[in-house]
Length: 620
Image (cartoon, rainbow, N blue to C red; front, side):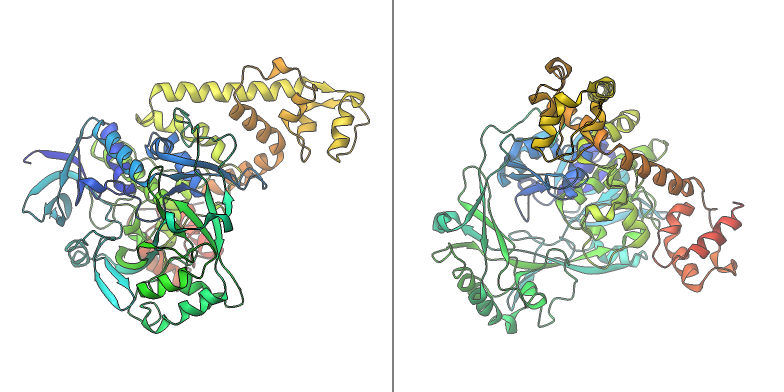
């Protein structure tokens, strides 16, 4: 307890676990402090990882050497690639997970990580000396000194749980809230706010009639999150889809007068893209029904997560309404849904390394920054852990650009724009999403991670081999000619225009519905051409051939815009003295303190003319 650590991580949720693992694996002596060792990496909300845009983040974490992908694979009960009917930029992997196994596997991996110690206690304050964070104080009176501290407090900072007219302190059901840190940070000059999130009731699966629900099985050939692909499912559990109806809505409305959301007892702003069921029936009153996802919590438990029925209404109203859902007429509730309010800090107060601007050595990651989701938290934690280690070793920071990773988009959005609602990642937020596909995260990021010492040499060699094989497939198709008489029957069968002359196989692949596998199965490509390659390598090669033009254009646009990232803004610049800047620009730039012209251009309220003023001032 008297040892000094390099990095202290406060909180063992998804952000804290990734932060601790990254710092320790890079060689920093790391301490992970959590209020309960039995709930490390607990899935407080839905028992799933990934989904649209979020799956890309998990793949990126894995490519960078993080643990989320591996743990997700080890605890998966179902794997599904979403949006297969759309373009590859939209394909998003998702796993349904065994909640208890997920937490267990995370703890086991952390306990096997060198340089990582644990302490069960509540952190009630920071030790700040000469305006630098040098440690933490705990509830039992222990002080731990360190060179850096990463706060990943999730929903625990002054957390307040609401169920109908009842409210009580808590970071989640069955866990107390954390106090002291918010008050100290505010006294140090930090700007804080309140946010809200919620969760649905948990149901006894034995009381559900699945025969009236729509079964949603996993993929016939399940994939994996981790590029190592060491833990692939051999059996899966199905999810199911159900629907609310007008009778359900009518009963829910009887509880509105006791709803903390409608009576004003909840001050925090909730996630617009994941609203409560009571919010849905008000905002979308024209809809006669809303879709619900009936998700198993694990292999051996009967507990069910009723996704889409998040609510903070009184528990008797929840149960009465739920029993009017087809298939739920005899449903038994394990625990009611609830809303939770918690403190967060505007992320515009952070550098792009996630270090705070006010207090050197102090980092924020996860929901404390106003984000929502396990995946967004894990990505931030990983980057905070990496950068805390790099700084104390006097190395250059590790920052991902918007054209390099969804994690780069996430952090750049947060530090430049801030947020007034829980921030959730979407593919639409990434302007270079055709470059940031889930299939190529390892090729994009593993070399970078290996350079800083996180992804090991074995991972790098596998990635280099994969890239070489993909290029080999593309080269082979570019050299292979297809004759009209050979390929036309296949093309016509797919309602594709027949050829009039021979063309290269790579050109044929660019057509809609034409696939590499289809050409192979129709004996239009020699089987030996693909025999040495994995299905993923073949799929990657097909994507690159099919979308070559789009990818090239997006790279050109990215390169052009990213040139602004190379123009560093002078330190300690007084924007008020730049008379040509708009008053809004002076205010925003003074507050955010961007480090590059590129970052400044993305701040809300900064106009092209303001950017031009900055360019001239910096001699460009």
